[in-house]
Length: 527
Image 1 (cartoon, rainbow, N blue to C red):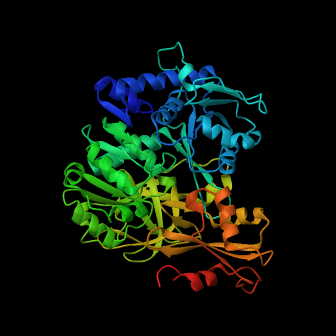
Image 2: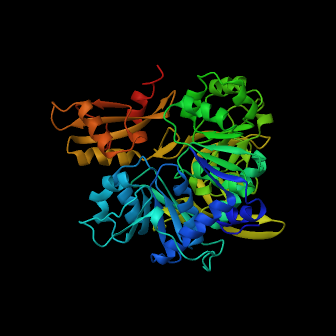
Image 3: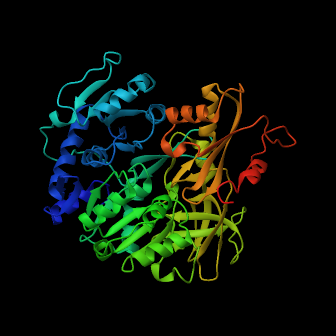
């Protein structure tokens, strides 16, 4: 059994070296070639001064070099930090600085975009450019070495002799919380391998599967498409789509058997005709990152009668928690399901005691998939990763579990149903967005006196971001505010609606009353 993340690839290279591992456009790597590439780049990383537990970030769209860099970081004993390619320079700089990234893998065009913020990344000493054929220098940052991916190779042909164990930090995935800047969720090798094996059990993946990866690799659900495939020797087709119809074309072209997406994409895909060839190859499709509307699921099931739908619930702090077996969908509509293999999901009261059937309580996840906590954030870690006492066969065990912040109920059959969240986190397009992140950008603009961001139910996005603001000058328009947001925030954080008001509802303490504002606008997109 593999114990470290890169072992998923090296093991398959021994078992079936000629099987296709990765496909991107006209480029294909089999498992032996992929293994050779990650060994090479792992040794390059070490030769550039990377040491055990250092952080290596990848800021790229889905392409083969991005995948190699992640698993090569693992082989070098480092931890990888996949950065969503749609993030802007300021968000990238925050992540690189927050977790002290030493080496960054990116492209020539992205380097130009981020050059102004590199001064904020104090410990960054090397940048590898994957698409340049000539040497590059940064006159304003002489302390940062710029290397060209295609021209730098190691003479070492063996795996680096690094003393890494499965409890070591493998990856840091950044995800928004309800307040402040995004937090880095720390995942061990054990977390990620256990997660891959759990998913392959209920999806029944084999080396015959061909999985289309359309989600960002910075998203745990997107990264899971790689680890799931590699754990069984399946093939992954990397794709950054422009139009939803392109996804359907790719399913046909590559004879895809597994497709994962978030609700907004499924809603769009359900509006197209699926050719018979797509339905013949697509063995299963999965949803996570939000609730899939009942009508959307019904339409997809009619269009893909031979494909099994898997509805799932998860959070980065525990990878994946529940799923609904396809044969139970009709009996347990609107359920988030039962615990995935090798995990236990509890419904607990505030005092830690277990709720009765249909009694609302907090969803708590225990087991091998519970992450290591948040990077350099002990207080935030203590809020979410809290001890529980498990009594099993007479043994009393105290362990850390993830307290999700989600209120759920469990029916008599053990199926969970989502009720609400404790915090103000906005769930849009499969992403978690902190309202404070949007609000802070507005304050930085100097255009507003006060601003508040709300998550309002939306038929396509799950929740839409609605920004309500008091502008400093009457001449300032919603259009100007949105323009500033587009400069400073990635697409999924752009407000769908900006409302300028002369005053905002307040509570008895004089603070903006978020709940009253929510009640005022909760039907904005549904009435």
